[in-house]
Length: 59
Image 1 (cartoon, rainbow, N blue to C red):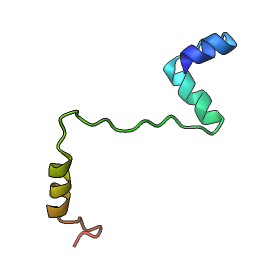
Image 2 (image 1 turned 180 degrees about the vertical axis):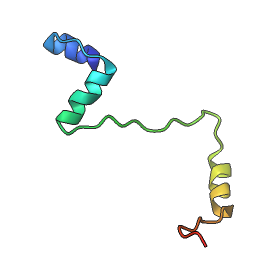
Image 3 (image 1 turned 135 degrees about the vertical axis):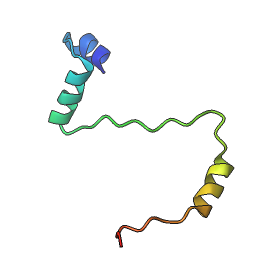
Image 4 (image 1 turned 30 degrees about the vertical axis):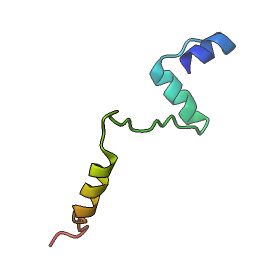
């Protein structure tokens, strides 16, 4: 984003400045969480099935 701002508008922005600029115009920069290339999707799905759901209320 900073490179585009420099090339198209001849302005210099730090990463923090880019985040601030995007926030002011109502845009957020969100990226997906990465996955390890050797992650076992079947193992993750099986784990989710075994896990007990958490209770929101503390007794």
